[in-house]
Length: 258
Ligand SMILES: C[S@@+](CC[C@H](N)C(=O)[O-])C[C@H]1O[C@@H](n2cnc3c(N)ncnc32)[C@H](O)[C@@H]1O
Image (cartoon, rainbow, N blue to C red; front, side, top):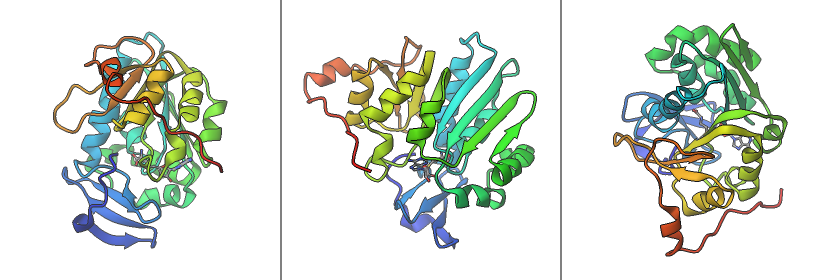
């Protein structure tokens, strides 16, 4: 998700008066939220963005993790692309446990009728279960969608390997980009912990850097690069943030009153 999402010419019909359906550059659909005035995905492609910014990186890094169960935090569920594509790309030798907060219950309930990419047809049963019950479990996958504020929900978690940091932009969804929020995220990560995000905003990188994360970026040139924050070295292009801090003041997004 990138905050370039006021793509007026792509907007299709209105959905429940709350969203507009938007076709993105890879021919997959996303929504534009009329409340936040932003799209759930970048115009580069809903499926393409999900894979290259988040899921592809996660699957690649899972190869180096010995644990049989990989625990993923998906911030926030939205249309569920990150969660659904993760289960479609699950390495055979891994179990996935996915935790995802989402404030908008009406959105989750509507997902069984959303026009997902055809690749998602084979998990239609899972999409329907999540949409109806906010929960799914089989021998290899467990998904829990929590209709709660992410800031409170994350405090109950532990031992997380991967966080997909995919909130709306800091301009409209500030509470999920503050240094206080990222401190809580750091507290629930295990030693392999990484955060994937589309954001390259200096206050976001400053917060992550100040908390002791090493900063990297994506390898692929197919879409705009974002930020990967890791507690240990990973085989991705490093962001030389110390060099940047010689030129800019380190400022972060701070908590705002409720
Ligand atoms: C950019 S969308 C997520 C896109 C999603 N990853 C996907 O693949 O469709 C951001 C979502 O965060 C939810 N949200 C915003 N603030 C929240 C909060 N404080 N707690 C939980 N959910 C929140 C919104 O309702 C919205 O569905």
